[in-house]
Image 1 (tube, rainbow, N blue to C red):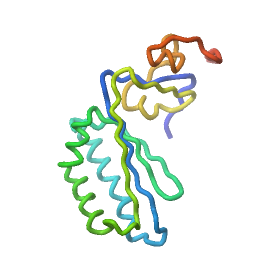
Image 2 (image 1 turned 180 degrees about the horizontal axis):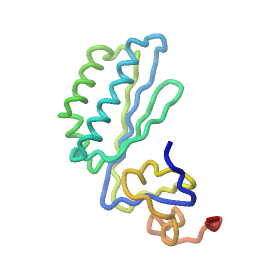
Image 3 (image 1 turned 180 degrees about the vertical axis):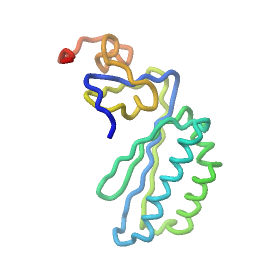
Length: 169
């Protein structure tokens, strides 16, 4: 289990980046032979991406729901994400398999959303959390001073609505 970092932190990334949300939804629960291969296809892709940082992949996290799974991925650029989608051997095999074995049958749904984030146009806070999400993709830094509030993290200025508690250590 990841170590909890007491206190308030935020993420810092230099330059633009991409948030890619991808997932699957089980539409017919008893069609395990259709949805299980789709579910299992993501593991090898992530292994390939983590082994090859030059592809532009930064980090991912899994989120389970009662009917499926969603992954939030962070990429250096849209061009690198698209390059992997179109030419990554593991991804292309999974895409072809899905089209051949599931296609438009309605058994399993898949989706993705892509967000292009410009530098300084994001904010995050992690309070008493392990290094997570965007902070894991970039840098995990204390949420103090100009990073204390959401507005400050976005380059605006305001005072905290609720003061940050002192560090008990």
